[in-house]
Image 1 (spheres, helix red, strand yellow):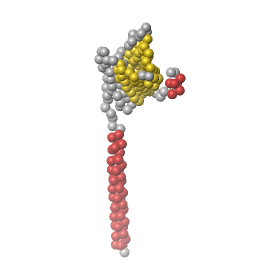
Image 2 (tube, rainbow, N blue to C red; image 1 turned 180 degrees about the vertical axis):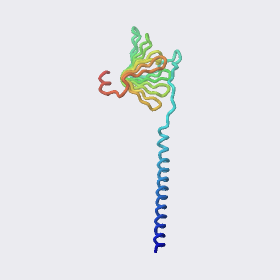
Image 3 (cartoon, rainbow, N blue to C red; image 1 turned 90 degrees about the horizontal axis):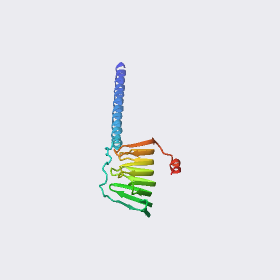
Image 4 (cartoon, rainbow, N blue to C red; image 1 turned 90 degrees about the vertical axis):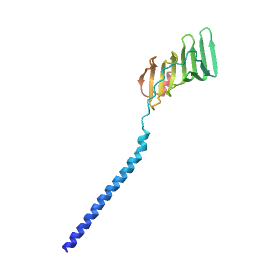
Length: 184
């Protein structure tokens, strides 16, 4: 009878060992599935390459081509005003706004109303108002949202771009729509 009790303990021990081995194999299999299913998720967060800003200006004599609903030019003040849905292409840049003013005496573009500046490197700047000078290399924007090519979005109340390509954003963060609209 004692041998029979020993045999029962052996069988229970083997079952317990098999249960432990089965649980470990199951855990290993599930963890392999879990890790392999995370690979596509990790690939989705792959860092995009940095795209350098374009610093070159359009060549001398490059025309600013545009489409607008209405254009007026005052020869006395050398001021051109385009209104409506204005789309202006200047070299590799595209400027879209409801009103664009060009001062021929100072070579300064001013844009107001749903302003969007598309840069040659793929960055898109959206603003309430924008002033561009020095062949689009320098500028000032109010209530700016910069959509950068590396999936970064910067919002700021004011931004200034200097000739050396450095852009300084002030009061960075979320812009309240009521504030942006009331200051236009």
